[in-house]
Length: 414
Ligand code: HGY
Ligand code: MN
Ligand code: MN
Image 1: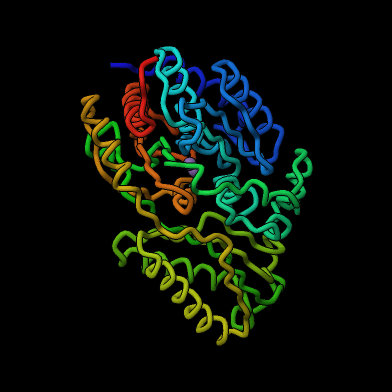
Image 2 (image 1 turned 30 degrees about the vertical axis):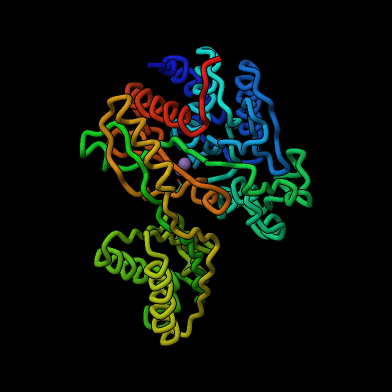
């Protein structure tokens, strides 16, 4: 039975992690940066080594295509994202891109051709950490990304997505040309680390993803009145941070009571931010997730109601802005079956599970059938320098993807 070369794959993962190596730990590789450019240069080098047809689109997504024997057939797309969170790990995203290249290299070395062409994709800005809105690359592919977003969203230095693109030689006005049509693709398959503890708790090295939760990012801004921390009596204050603290506790309790709902405040900004000044404004970002979009929207309504009650009595104001919305999706039963068959053929223990993390696959679902294979995460840690997956688990998952692809792309021995 053919297998990937896992030592080679692990070396590629290690090499790629150098681009964006962060002296404070882990990898920080934001979109439209020098680190991302160097990482892409490395990926192009690996793609060229195995003779792929290389193409970069108008937002910087990179594709390497192994042409099939029947060019009239739709392609199979495999891959993931190349960007990371701040001080992220070396597997999140990168594993899916490099495993895709490794699988095509193995096919080439084993003299296997497929009727369908297979393309490896390296998407830009899945995480959305730099500009507070993500899935840029995959949303450009499906046509969901609106040009005005590129000028609207800015990073903490006031640089817009469009500015970042121009700095890297892309023209934001041409982003619509990145759009691809659904008849080009038969399927999209993404290999990704689980980033959670379920596989480890069930001693399963591999997961077959059944669906991906919906995500809503809410930017909540609460405005009060700046004042001197020493001369302003407590009863005369309009301190937005105290409202924010009550809101966070309220949301945490609601989430605890709702099965499967996840709510996180990962970023809080206080203005002006001096120790001895009662703030005039606080900005907090909620990340709310669930397989039910209705439940997510209900939480947003609850937040609005809570803030109205709190702020009106205190003479403060607030805004709630949804900066990022991803509807929950189901994976294709056909692809789930193909992955399950491959897992049985390779004799790998696997678990069926939903994804609590968002992925490019959920965007591609509007274009084509999607399937995902998860690799067990050590201690469930991700978005951290401590992110780790064992080579044996990676090998098992990549071999499952390889064998599923042989079926889906209709392989033939040449
Ligand atoms: O936020 C997520 O779920 C993904 O890691 N971008
Ligand atoms: Mn991530
Ligand atoms: Mn990811």
